[in-house]
Image 1: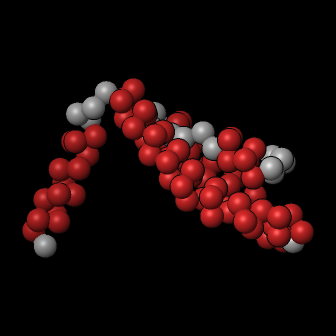
Image 2: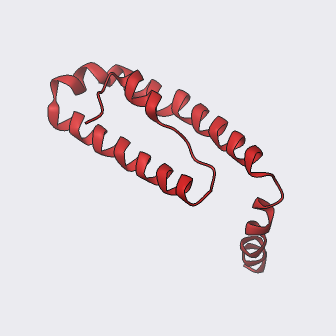
Length: 96
C-alpha cells in the first residue's frame, strides 16, 4: 500500500522530466497506434451495419464527440492531445 502511495506522489514530477514537444509526440504516437489497432479495425466490419442502423451510428458520433472534447480540454490545458479528425474520415462519418 505504501508503494502505491509513493508512486502516486512521484508521478507528476516525472511528467515534467520530458519536454512538452516530446510528450506530445509520444502521446500522439500512442493514440494513433491505439486507434489504428483498436477502434478502427474493430469497427470496420460494423461500419456497414452502423450505416443501416441510425441509432447505433448516432452513438458512434456521440462517442467520437466525447473523445474529441476530452482531447480539446487537454489541448487547452497545454497537455499532450490527439486529433481524431482522421477517425471520422476513416469511418466515413461526416461531422455534424
